[in-house]
Length: 597
Ligand SMILES: *Cc1c(COP(=O)(O)O)cnc(C)c1O
Image (cartoon, rainbow, N blue to C red; front, side, top):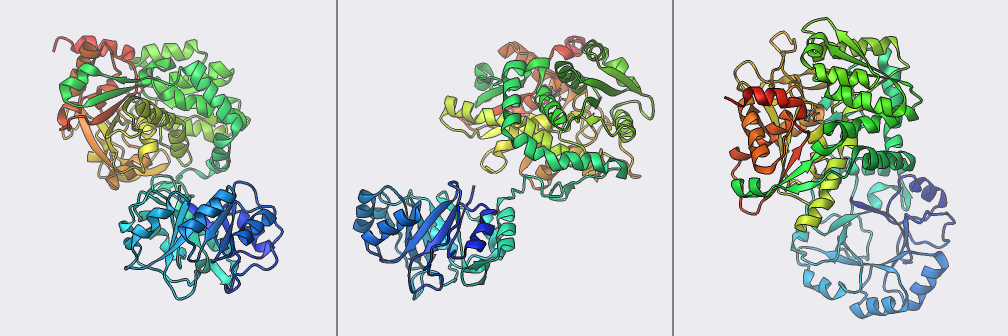
């Protein structure tokens, strides 16, 4: 997270406004030659999460200490020619965070900073000018490549709202944040709070997170009938607040632990690793209650639905997996559950239909069109319009905003666990590669979530190629699809020349979705993730291989992720995580049928 220091504050009202922007530091200048010199210290209650910094230029140590205790400062910034001994003495006399400023230009010798390292917490690299500090001029930040020290630093010098993209792209392992001052002022010391707010929002906005309108790049949004606006808006206005609340987190984490069985193990598949010449870890989502990752999401959404006061839940399902996960949490919470399912799928997925019924859900057949998933979705939406009091529980990172983002946040527990598990097992939080299968994209979104910003972690999304990408019987959406609108969001989907959705095909029922979620469309377009695919045959072979070599029968969907292992040229000692999204019990019939082939 990039830290923000706003410097040169003096006016109490302006500071009160600034607190809403929640900077990390607020700077007060105690240097009488500055235009922002503080004479009367403003009386404002600054919360402890925001540090008050006193900025001094060649001040006596006694005076610094006096001001620190009088104004309860949490940090001092030394902006003059203070020596290493000066810092050392200050340190020995009081415990306080010390920020040392260095004025740099292309001739600056960064070795000077070395002796300061053990006495300072943070450096600030400012423009070299005639006067001390605050001359609002920019220098060429690429000079900082020469800095090889250990102490983190702030960038300073004339930063304004036009620098957001450059700052976001600035690469240095010790880069900690920015110092903002004259670039955001209406008059000396008077900050333009709106400008600061927008700057911070844009700075914090990751390109892999939805923007305020629910878009990842050009993908996402909410394309819904007007009658659904109030419902979707209610969810949009509340979901982040609910998810981030302590109460939700406590209930969600407790259910994930005691009901779902998390954390799921991260297992080093030794024999598989030997065969493919890399350290291959399996993230065992197959060990979750109900046999797949889907329950992470339904547990989260059922809590959200309850907080919104909803008592009736609807969902749609293709293979029945999401229907079962939804019926499960509805039984758990004693809520009424209606699941829409294509008539054809009801016949094909009889065991899951039986499970849903036993769990107390009502299964409503969709009898229109091709009588499969997209028709079930249409039925669910139609019902939702007529019964706006119901909560629509969507099963993947698809649908209108905020669903894709909400589901990704709920599945993010997968990569959250991967981080500490990898650290424990390999000493590093980051693997080299993460592989996950993609239907709508929720298990992949969860496995990628905390790694999307770390470009050194390769992300591989695997789609189902059915009988072959160009066979006409496939679900390789990114390869075959085009930009369009499905299920209320703009994304990549398989459609014919008239914009009609093409019926997808895969041996695995969980992957034959004609689109991918908007996040994945963006990961594909931006090339952040590599999209590969596996045919039915390759997936089956991978499933048999895992079963024989590791004693784990994977879901057919997860087998697609495993199926790309032979296609990748791994470097020795590379750390690879395959997200094993589900277990194979549900696919036994298919496995047995093909065993002879
Ligand atoms: C549903 C399902 C998938 C596909 O859905 P995503 O949203 O892409 O994760 C993958 N694996 C299993 C086991 C599933 O049940």
